[in-house]
Image 1 (cartoon, one colour):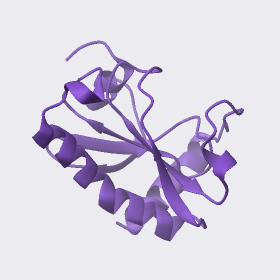
Image 2 (cartoon, rainbow, N blue to C red; image 1 turned 180 degrees about the horizontal axis):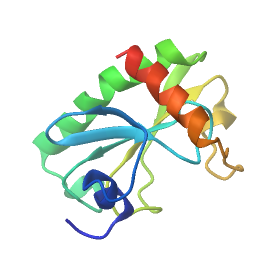
Image 3 (cartoon, rainbow, N blue to C red; image 1 turned 45 degrees about the vertical axis):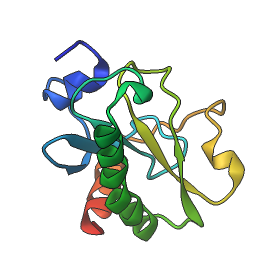
Image 4 (cartoon, rainbow, N blue to C red; image 1 turned 90 degrees about the vertical axis):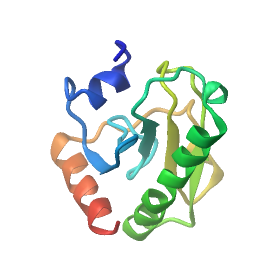
Length: 131
């Protein structure tokens, strides 16, 4: 494991509000979300740039996001779940899943929310219950 923030989460060195996990992937709440229910899906294997992943790894990451996105949509009132891959903030591939009611909900330039630990724990439990 490297020293990226997400690798430390995968290793259990930093706690997270886990949504879903399999052998190769992890989904957890963004602690400074754009909107309530904002989830990050990552491969456990650290790769900095999405297009350095193999075809199979990339396909499997997107397949992993599908049930998570469906669970978010059941949990948070929204029109749809938006996705974004920016890759500049943490050097570890991650897909943002963001509940959307309007285009501005996925504006990464806007001020982030600062939910409490309790609010995050409640949201994580709600999404997990809808998986």
